[in-house]
Length: 470
Image (cartoon, rainbow, N blue to C red; front, side, top):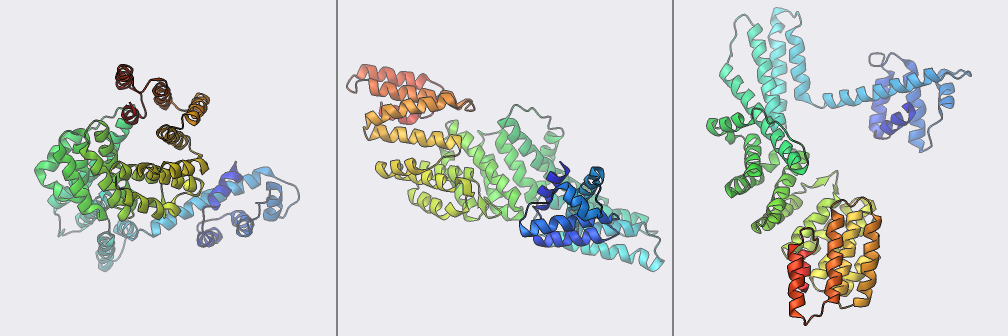
């Protein structure tokens, strides 16, 4: 276990990080155990050359230069290296945060018995550098508000320790605390609410109602980190009040550059999921809103993570564009982002989206060929591809092929145990497709009865298409 988790961790290190870890391990200040540094050298050689790591017995002999194997000693060395690697990552990350480092330095200096001429000057210099670092970083989210408050608080404590305090502005300190609290409270509440909506969780939101009222009354909404999440929460909890959503959209589009990439992406996902729920609830205007968020986020590269686009975003953005009949945009999108997809799903997702595009352009033959050549590793994607094949066979009047496809599709659904609520949706769609085949097209009474039955069925994956065929 020790060896496995250690190797998994070390494989995440870049060559530069491994060199840094080696220096870290060789320092007596950070690592008093020489066998840990030796073990790192042994494992680094294997990692560098792409060879399997030595077994524990071989590693033991190379570390301790002894023949009689002691499993406990080698396990302790591995555990020590694992902990040291964690410490290195934490220290390296801390050292990149100039503001946090200078603030900690100011705290330390405040408690040092320095000469009188340095007792005030040294902490003030650290405060100044910390303040500059906080102001210099580009983000203005809740993390920024909290860092700004911590800086104000530490400066306040420093002034209190001086015999003649100069700047005890407690009102400003209180304001900074409010801004930090409101920004973080609204941020957390939005994601608690989103999770509550998607699951069976039930949360107590604590002081939220008082915080919302205070934000409106105090002018705190002039701060983007507060306003974006305030209006997001109001929109999520008041979906019929379109003014809240429009204000959330306006704040997000105006200030999205003030949020770090991961948080910015999360905000766009919150907005898109809200639009999807509203559209599914019967509000067609939100289809265009959803598409706007996808187009804006893709244009600004907000949905990329380490240069990669999620397969779900690729699929859902194309779905949104197809629903809006923005076919030229969809074609450009699926071609442009093809190579940014994760490798295992790239070709199947590309072929499926291209097939959907050809289907909507009524090029049914090419669409069918694209569907048949792809290897779908994802279960839901495979189901969606089979459903599109079903529609194409029907619309081409290839009824013999459709009969065979319905049988194979039904068997596929029965064998898949992890379908959950999707099973009923697909089974009902297969049932009604079969009924379409069996019902005389000229029998208006039978077709009307079939339509009524479709409309009364709650779980029906392709209701709109089926009703169109009736």
